Image (cartoon, rainbow, N blue to C red; front, side, top):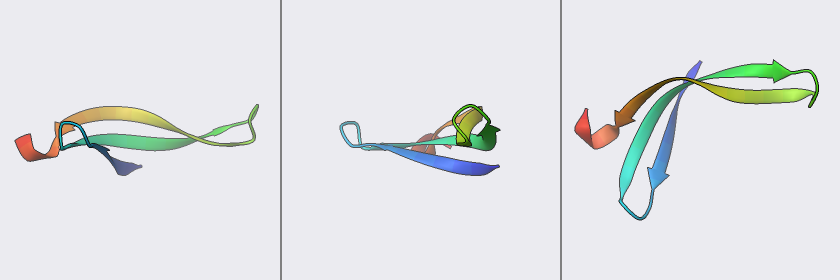
Length: 44
């Protein structure tokens, strides 16, 4: 699990999410699944 920071350039906000990497056997690579959306970094 890790934190993902997504930056919105238009609104100049950074959004935080808790993400878990999961193996996808069909694609044979890892995919990121969002566990919990935390919110905007400047509002925490």
